[in-house]
Length: 131
Image (cartoon, rainbow, N blue to C red; front, side, top):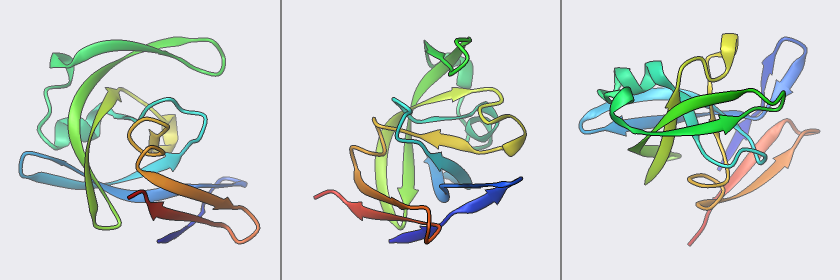
């Protein structure tokens, strides 16, 4: 399955559309495919929209590129990517991507489920499901 990069300001970014599901509530959401991210982290707002009580999750800390630490809350959530559903543990945190309003998918929960090929010149990301 292939996805096109998306333009944010002057930059092309590997941002794809996924679906998040909790109980019977499903919402579409955009995420940055980030091979440097350890885990999947989504904005608290999308978690609340699908019915998750964010602060009731397991608190963890993440440190960003500039060295700042932020608290996120871990919950089990179903992600649907290209029609393929996976139940993963993901973090929910306010203002994950600032003004860009997308989440981040990383090593645990995404790269362990897919073989990912980035092709900047073609401006596309290719995902193959791990079997």
